Amino acid sequence: MTIADKPDQIKKDLSTFTSLCAGAAARAEDLGDTGESDPTTWLFGAGTGDKVVHAVLSVAADTEALLKEKLKNLDTVEQTHQITRVHVDEGRTLKSDLKGHEHFGYKDGISQPGVMDFHREDAGRKGFRDNHAGTELIEPGEFVFGHKSEQGDRKAPAWMKNGSLQVVRRLRQDVAGWNKAVVDGVKNFTGNMDADRLGACLGGRAKDGTPLAPPCSAVTGLGSDRNGFDHANDPIGRHTPLGRAHPPHPSACLRRNRRQEAEEPPPDAPRHSVRP
Image: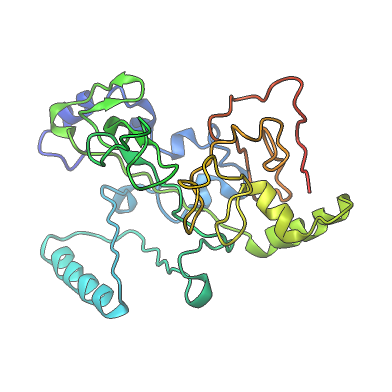
């Protein structure tokens, strides 16, 4: 806001976005950023003077050569306009057999929502994207400002129309710790439970992306991701556990509700259970 052409007007326009205006450091306790995660340990986001972050830029490319070319161009822009680079985080996708998987090894990007009035609606199933089984259409206001949201009209200044807010949060993932905890957790079960099965029960899908839930239709539920399911044919959780699943490792704060499932499962349903 301090580098805006009219900073006072911008502050007024954003006054209803209280969390944004306060900043992450001011809300650290509310977000659980204490102890080792206290703002004094942050690499960015809590600085003063020339360490204050005014802009965030994400740079992505399909090849290392293209990425280096883009970064070289940015170096020139920064030098020309006297921009100070506060921090850089480098990220990489997994390769080989784990291409398209997140760093815990699970296939990623399967169940992305569709955007109402942008993606074509399935003529036979209102509210779902055509030719993408199981993909719900969400109001565009959930993605960008100036459009109807799931709660109705979302007010925002005119200059924010078709824009959004970028939030950067730096987390550490203890992949080895998670995997060990899942293996250890198998010891609490009898029968045919194994680490792959328990991991799938915690997330709802196997590592290759196959859901625990059977498809709601023998036709539309098929496909590489078998994404056309809604648990209507599994009301008591025989395939996919109901309600919340306790994380097997303290680094994973996991709360999972099944699709179309209420915030809390019915009182007569088995809770916190895993059915091998």
